[in-house]
Amino acid sequence: MTKSVVSIAKGTDIQEMVDRALAQLDGVDNLLKPGAVVFIKPNAGHPAPPETSVNTNPEVLKAVVAAVKRYKPKEIIMAEASAVGQDTLKALATAGLHQAAQEAGVDRVVDIKRLAKEDLVDVDVPDGVEIKKFRVPKMMVDADCVIGLPIFKTHLSMVFTGAVKAMKGVVDDRTHRKMHFVDLSEALFDLLAVSQPDISIVDMVRPMEGLGPMTLGKPVDFGCIVAGTDALAIDATCCRMTGIDVYDTYLTKGAKRGVGVIDEDQIEIRGNRIKEVYRKLDTPFLEGFSRYDGYCIYDENSCSSCMGVMMYVLEALKTQGKYDENKGISIVFGPKKDLPEEAARGKDLILVGKCVERFRDQGVFVGGCPPMAFGPVFAILKREDQEEEQAPVDAWKDAGAEDWLQAVEGKHKDKN
Ligand code: SF4
Image 1: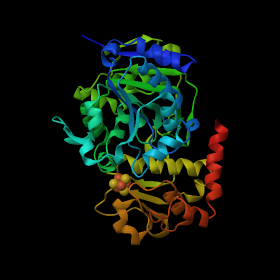
Image 2: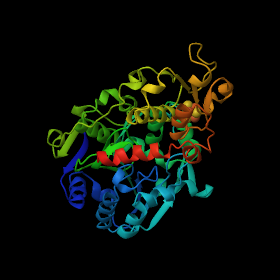
Image 3: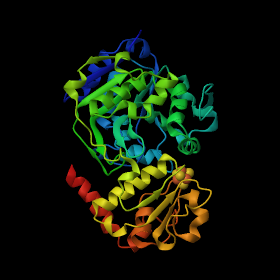
Image 4: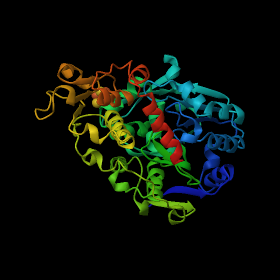
């Protein structure tokens, strides 16, 4: 049986780690031939600065570009489509990735969301479970080598995000949203089946633990680069390096479909051993909503975006000592035929997201699909409706809650 090779490089010099991680793989010379067009897909989902670890570390991007350049490629493209509703170019700039790309000599930086119709191509997924066709960048399909370059992070609704989930950033907002409305993990494997990078290089230099994947998560010094050609095997290895039970994650669905492998005896580790680099990452949300004592949460049928937002909100309330004083409320989200009978009504009923808008006259409503995290927080604290466009900034100022937000962010910074 041929095993999937996963290369681990631990150290302090990012360039040396990237070079070593690639050197430990087979066949890189065949993928990165002179004259090749290389398509690099980093993580730049949200406009957050490099020190937050929300996006790929720009120093890792520079090291990867330097390594690729040694093979004398014809062109290096860096492309991304940030999270739904986010501006990719702003995210790339804030993350320091745009500047890093320019300094490293990337030929083209591409916002996939801004590509013209003729620059996109439909790709069928014959065995697709949730999605049978994706529209992806033509330049990615035509590239000689696609490199996935994600950062590894704990994730409120998905447990973790790494090589598999990062490829969600090659589709437009419409498809991205659609993926969240079906079984996201199956949709991820539908996409991976047609967009598996030739090489995935996972940034584990300062991965995120805790309340990821956004700024309430905490970067930790891990000092590793992990690389390979099988995104599932890479993610499974990263899980084993961080104490996440592989068989308790969405990876099992991909392995069952044969998109990659996750069993230890199917993976050959090269370079550093897992036990040499092991460090448990904090994953406080693995218990699901049952840990939120005193709150009645009705999340049936909801997609992972609303689940993630609400876990973030509840954890943020705890962090700020606002959790206990709001016990007794009901929070309802996700598509529902009827409101749960036993849920509260009136000011103690928080209805979150477009799916439950039609019940808005029976409680406090928060707009958005998915809503911004500050909308539900404000609705819980003030018991007033939050329209989608109002939530992020104005309402906070009116409520005097800006201080609260700053306190959350301040606390986050202190933790680091
Ligand atoms: S409102 Fe929430 S649960 Fe409904 S589709 Fe939007 S993100 Fe999903």
